[in-house]
Image (tube, rainbow, N blue to C red; front, side, top):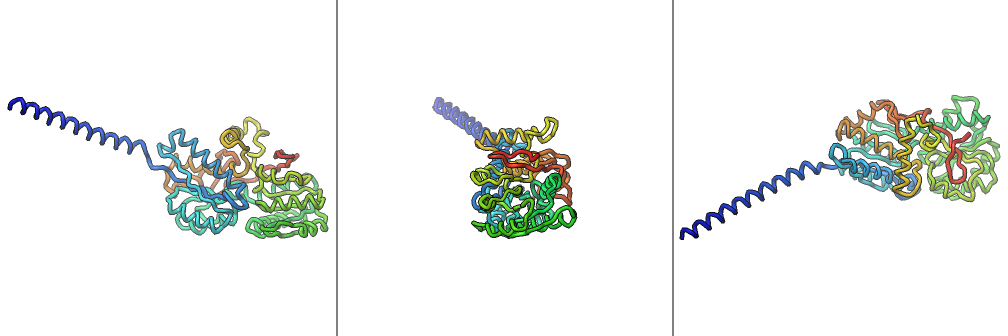
Length: 391
């Protein structure tokens, strides 16, 4: 009897010890898990993965994912991993609105994109009142409320870059071919403003084309009859291929300038066999990064971007990756310094000065949500399948 009581006592003691140990272990694991797994910061990437602007959106999303992966490999942002939440606008303002609504509902700390002017204009009302911060990747979009920012250089700055080049070459008679969409209207308004300011230039012809056109020979023949010294075709997407092909077929030999929205190796591939004799584009300095002196603060940033992108995706970084790379890095820096609070994040960007990126040295303010200017742009010439500095 005594032996049975002793055995039962030891069984009870051992059971209590085991239960206590399991409980302590469970509590410790739960606490450790809580400390180790901080909530991710969600960043929406609203870009054109399909449709006419997909050649931009593809690289934009790739660069955003690359930055997020690199940040997460380094421990995230104060332990918070970055999570890219992508949405395809299909190059459509309507789809962009649906995507922005979904991303806002998902609780993203910021939205990078969209890729186009019309898409950016369409989503602006959704964030006008209370955000979150939207960093449009369109060079033509004018930020129209406190929550909207924009990448690259504004259309008029890019046009000034081209006109500076023309003036140096003695080219004064200009023709403009513009799409009937928001990008085209921005180009028309901007170029007319420049013409009004500088009497050295004359706009000898203005023609409009629909974004869905598959032939623009009529408009180009009208322009040809006015005998311009150069043609500016300001549009983005597949329509530019149509313009280049018809331009070549009509035997036009004057310089053809297309907008910086076409700074893509996909575009160069698409016009092989009918590339104009002189094809020019305004661009930010990242496209001439190999020519930058080693003392330029943008040189090392671009070297990292281009080498990392080529190693990861097997292709060169062009316009899309560059603008998204800068947008992601600026937002990440803001998250590190002020956290995910949207008001603080917006204020951080507005107060960012002399911040080197791949595409520019940024100087934002409450009145300037682009942060770039003429100092950040150059004129490029297409030679074969390469972009080179125009002499």
